Length: 323
Ligand SMILES: [Zn+2]
Ligand SMILES: [Zn+2]
View 1 (cartoon, rainbow, N blue to C red):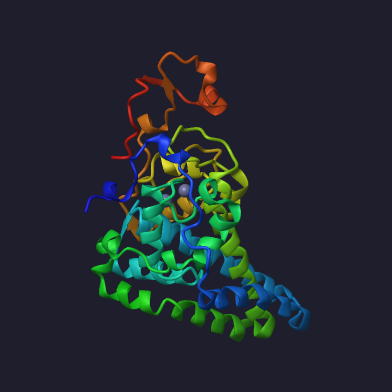
View 2 (spheres, rainbow, N blue to C red):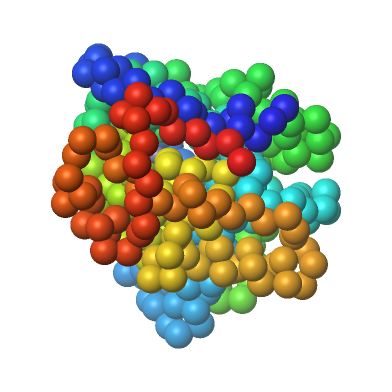
């Protein structure tokens, strides 16, 4: 399967005018229980207290969770923006599992579906179609999205160890929680494990919600994706979401030096020590903003006018993500 079949090239803006209610208004209550526990558990701080050790554990676990999602589930498993060994692929999958967002096959399947149907009625979590709350949390409990589409992740499911981990996706977070308890006692478990997971959940969920509502649009993609600096800082670079929707095959989502992208810096570090390779970058021509024929230059987004050389194209030309 070509990497370019995993990403959307659909650029028909008329589909955004379609609206329909959320796919299912009735949540799967059983699925809500772990989510509610995750949100209530940090309240136990009242009894456990907070110390420096638990705060350091919290920071470390937050970094594990976010890196697992950004480097692992998103930039590797969903988009294959770099290559690695089978052993390190499994390490990335385990790291992603610690974020309590199910297994890599489910996550990649839902995410590839998002790119194919961004901000349409088919999208699992579009705030444009179904509102902020639905895109941030609500869709997770809808039975519609409880299962991914196995056909869309055949390139991943051919690895038996990934299928095994998909079934036991709760095992890495259980081990991490145990380690937090052994290192920091009850406050290590509550602050180090539960609070960090709560924070990383909402930080990464902001990419689905806030990054399709608020921020700049350097590239006129067919969806409503935005570049949001705050979300980019919280999620180690995932907030450059308009860049990402414009060119999904790139390992870097911050396209310019001033767009801080910690996940990409880590990928470069891993490449430098030989753990990953063939890191894909955005071609120069894809960095440019397209200038619609007949439109004045000052009609373009401000950062295009200031920083980026322009190319003139026909309005009928569709964007391609192939490389
Ligand atoms: Zn993506
Ligand atoms: Zn998106």
